[in-house]
Image (tube, rainbow, N blue to C red; front, side):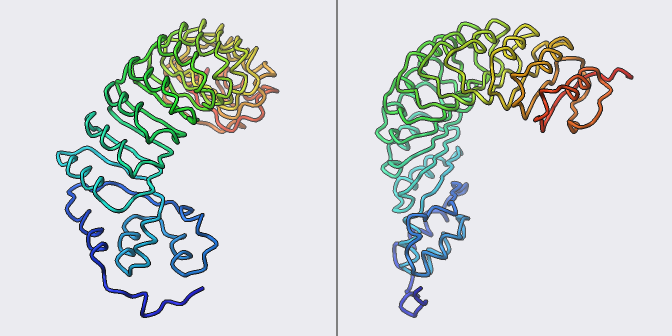
Length: 369
């Protein structure tokens, strides 16, 4: 390991001063994060700068260290980072400085909040984002989705999340039909105003076959949309599916449970879909690999709890949510080994097949109350 010498302690160069000045003018600074392992590729180097930098995470530490000497500065410029750009009345100034900066050329994760489509277009096509792996966009509209779909910087994405973005079917379909997203493993479209038409297009898109996580929370798929998803051979790698509040009901639950393609699912969220005891029975009869199951808000009765508890197919369950199915008592979490006074709780705790449960969340009525 080389020693720190006087040669390393150089005066601050003009480039370092620019680095410092870039962010002094912001009223609301972008949030920038460095990962501890972001210099993994440099681990074989023996100079002290590389070794020390592997233990540095906070952005403010990195920026201060960039002012130490030119060697430190060059090392900082190689760091992989995650950047969160938030909306404010000076957001265009903030984004403009990001485009111009000579730093952050290895942006791996980018999050944009509350930005108009013009800023989204310019940001996603910025050369700094050519290595993007993860992209999050909040409060977007269809036009923003169009710009992202045609960008040349998205082909390496493994995770794409539109949160609370009304991109509608037209925007969401434009995204999934672009072959640039063939490497996606995670697709999140919660509350994006999509319905069965989107599900139909997704089900017929071969380059979506790498997806392992799909989040469609708070949309309007209904049973028809679930039928499309369940019949798609291109979604056979899904392990995590979130269909919370999609008006799925028992018919949709039946499509999921009997799908010949969704057999790898381990995490299923059906919160707020009113599938009832019949829908639960279908799930228990056919889904063998579930470890996490959310059945809150599904009109499930004691009879449904008995079906669940007596199903050998549910033996892998570790986390179970049963809120707002029986009574209106306050939320509570109890250790699974306790003896509950509520009949449904007793049924679950005495089940020979639910011995792997480590978390049970419910609000059953106590009989003694």
